[in-house]
Amino acid sequence: MEIKDQVVLITGAGRGLGRAIAQGFAREGAKVIINYHHSEDKASQLKQTIGKQAIALRADVRDIEQVQEMFQRADKHFGRPVTTIVNNALINFKFDPVSKKDASKITWQDYQAQLEGAILGALNTIQTGLADMKEAGFGRIINIGTNLFHNPVVAYHDYTTSKAALLGFTRNMAKELGQYGITVNMVSGGLLKQTDASSATSDEVFELIKNSTPLRRVTDPSEVADAVIFFASPWARAATGQNLIVDGGLVMG
Image 1 (cartoon, rainbow, N blue to C red):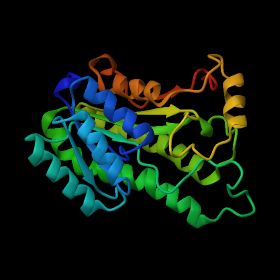
Image 2 (image 1 turned 135 degrees about the horizontal axis):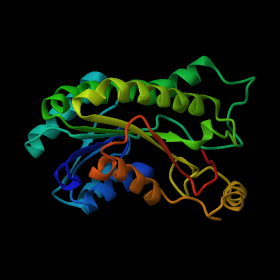
Image 3 (image 1 turned 120 degrees about the horizontal axis):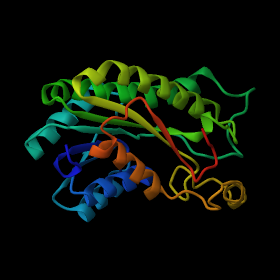
């Protein structure tokens, strides 16, 4: 299925990387669902920018009933079900290397909060959309990871662990859902300049990343968005269970 014929849900799309992903899919002609939890103003502004091919819908992806209602509203609005899911939502987290909790302070509740955002959120969206994808014989699921679980330059214990778990989740889903024409992949960016989540990161850290990266620059959200769109496109039809690192070459492998 070409991108212009897809109905794409992007969770956490009101700001940052999610916003760039929504804009990228809209550019390619897809119908776009801008999911948000707290960023109502930003989501509404993005919807106005994109126009008629987008709808902004509030839902906490950790709540299955809210997710189901969002899918129903989107189906009614566009007249056809979701074909493509981008699990991007980030729950209550800032990339702040100064105030982050170290090994002596991190709690299980911190881990649990990030695991629920990453794994429970993705599970809810996939299970809600699965029946329609099976019926269509087509589905594209792209989960947003991080290069930090390959190379934890900063030890964001809870966030990085949840994203490592998300890779295992991605590959298990890919194994089971491939028989229905559904691919499941991950795109892992590095530190992005600049999103709401990375706003607490110092210029010194950005400069360190820049100087350590073969491309000698910090990755832009639009560049990660293009990789997400690739996995939804016909060109990636034989790729599933993969993790594509998009960070200018900082992490290789």
